[in-house]
Amino acid sequence: MSEPVEVHGATPSAHQPPDRLAWRVRLKSHPVGRTWFRIAVGVIGAVLIIAAPLTGWLPGPGGIPLFLAGMAVLASEFMWAKRLRRLLLRYVHIYLLWPSKRRRLFWVAFFVGLGLLWWVSLVIVGVPGWIPEPVTTWLRFLPGVR
Image 1 (cartoon, helix red, strand yellow):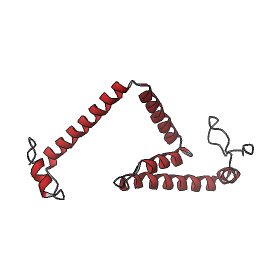
Image 2 (cartoon, rainbow, N blue to C red; image 1 turned 90 degrees about the horizontal axis):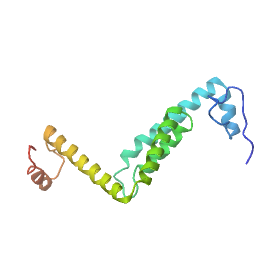
Image 3 (cartoon, rainbow, N blue to C red; image 1 turned 45 degrees about the vertical axis):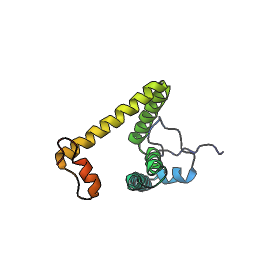
Image 4 (spheres, rainbow, N blue to C red; image 1 turned 90 degrees about the vertical axis):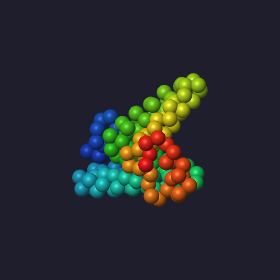
């Protein structure tokens, strides 16, 4: 692999290592090029993140890989995304250190909380009209749901 190339002003901070891609270094060394590059990275990352919930219903992993790819794209250029990615990875590492019993309890609590949130939304808003009639009949048996 070639040595990293560093151009004056191409790296935003001293904490980031120099870029290894020469074309990106040349592009980021010019103020206009850096601006358009950041806009392009932001748009591509946002499109991937927005596409994630839209493809979440598809079989397979759905939108999870798209969300992670969008965060990776944004983290390549924006420090807030890099910090968020590091924070999430730290929490994943902590979660993986938990014993299996505590992990199961976490997921039970998570889904119970999700169910309670869903029930509260049904109590406040009511059953949506797009839900099939047999399911609507069943949901009306829940307390407070109209």
